Image (cartoon, each protein chain N blue to C red):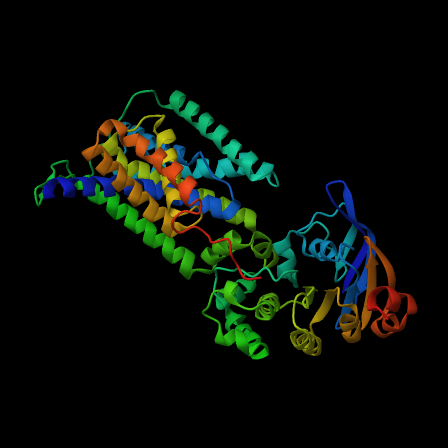
Length: 233
Length: 291
């Protein structure tokens, strides 16, 4: 579904991605794990088109989308729930969600709103409140819900577990698995490597802007090098 | 005494409504881009000047006014397209300096295309003052206030009730997230420039029968509007309206009770006072947010 080839991206003169290649297969959860500053967030930003790419290509369903604007990518079915949630603080929960459907017709918005509320009932309760007042976990649900409102074919999740209590992490990851069952392809970026690889069909380990290891989620979980470096085992 | 106060009140609200409109223009562009557009006053100037010259050329007033708004919107969009968009990614300070340059350029062009004289428009519905409880009120004041109220309501409905308006608010709240949900933020910025220009031009048209216009009225109006926006809290549409009206009232009462020579000083005292004591203004964004 998604094919990234030799992707490079820089902040000023500092190369954050030094040629990343990976594939995301339809219907799977693909996890990218790695430490702080390894380039995970930069990679997702490049995929959404909000971070300039200096070399390499991104293909989505065989089409080269490297030069596409962010809104064109959203319309094509790539949505992102960004690192740090990035909710529209002063706007209500419902407005945040409706804005997620900005590139979709009005017709399906109410229906999609209903399914997001079913997935995260707390959001229905708080629908009229400004999203800045939500707890971290609720904001995470909102960020994921907002991305889902655009009916994505590929959902990019950046650090959904960051700063959340373990019970909430489980709840968010369960939701990710449920999304996969519902037919959404997921690219999940996580520092919490063991949790991410446990639910992933395929995984990549990224180190200082390069892919260091790749394989099925289970294989990576049991790879001694990965275990030592990222799982603390 | 009561009649005198009423007089100050009405003239303060009238001129305050114009400041509020200019401040709203600042707010719209600031929210979409963090840029304080110092060419905002030139939109007001264009509104007045184009109307004056179109009327002199024989156009009916409503048509002349519509033409003036169109010209201002075109200039606003060109300003965005030719000066702001190519500098995308530059710091806010750079962009602000670009708008100052644009403002000087527009003033220069206006001086050549029009002239350096002062001009007046006839009041829209006569200039016989209406006597109300001893105060003499110009009918044009009602046009100014009515026009301002219509703009406020229109803008409120647009921002609060339409998805596009909410996209504008979302862009203001978090530009990265707005781009990630598929909002074309450079379109939002162009839209803000167009709207600001239209609102500024309307203010210029409405106030010209009272205050006269010339190629350089924009400078002072931009400063007053900026003071109003600061007082209300940069970025808050409600703050812009309240700040504008408050500034107009302060000016009018200062001119009436102290001396009209100090009228223009009020705006600058207000800017200083706001910066020293409450930089976020009356309705400014609180920087505390839960994370």
